[in-house]
Image (cartoon, rainbow, N blue to C red; front, side, top):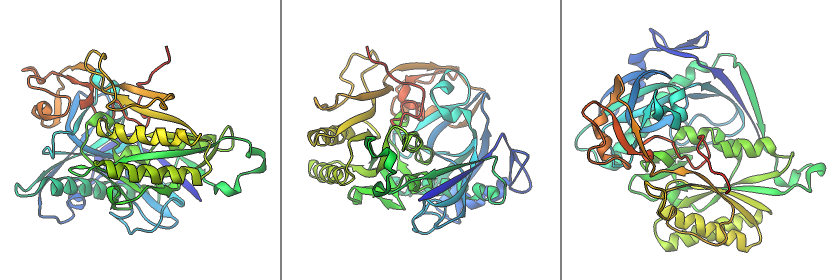
Length: 429
């Protein structure tokens, strides 16, 4: 299956009378954007839209999701299948990407676990989202909606907005077209048969209670581990619907731009044979964990993998799932490499993972989310920074009178993303 991503570089975003792209600038009809995002749902009581640019003294809080605007221009299926378009299989043809900008959903806190983005200062160094032109949607909902409805309303509003903006790139000639081809494992070239066969176990959070992810619009907590083509993920098949700690949440933007998938595709046929993705869920009960783990390992064996890269999302409970997967795969004689962040306490001296196994002997750490950071006041706040004390990683007194913030690193969106998306890493000593 072959997917082309036509990348349209966006260097500026401005409000205009019509939504269009001209000379690398995205002009947006603000009223039309708000109308499209609301989608006629009366449970959304108001939406306002703001632009946050890299380098500006701007803080966005609380952030629910980050989404890259895209549009399907050739091939089967559509954008955000199962939500915006039908459920036809995606991952082939051509999709245009508005690179350099994003839709950020902001608003009343759904739970205790959402985050923030600083566009300037030390906080900006921890998140790639500070380098994007962010179109922030501040969304308020009716008081009588449930938390699950609240999450759904924000999720769908963001997807609708991203699809609307993506349409501006439908007839624009991309500055660059990246071509990704994934061959069936049975069609591996003769010259690369001796290369190690590498699979990717892609663990998605699926614990209910605002801790869910979606595959083709289906909540993955109700899905057994399944095989997925890399290009399907790159083409929007996976959507975030959770409100976990901001630092290691996989936003929809992360799924659209998963660096592990891109790296494995780039090296396919060079120093490894990429044989496929197993999408697995992360459950609550031991029975569900065992079922999913056994099924995922079976799929790893069916792919004939010599090695597996494992990524997870979240911390604590998901640590049990990832260690169970790691141990079972290693016991089959298949090597694993795990990507995870740590919650080792403010001083870094505590046990960093809730579970462990002797089989986990190749682990990549992407940082300690409990690290205490101090952030200066920003000139502009999109949202409400007073909510910092309710975010995971915040605490009573986190917000100073002057507007500065002292909190754990976990309040920053994507700071310790477990796909290796950011610059925090580890080294062997």
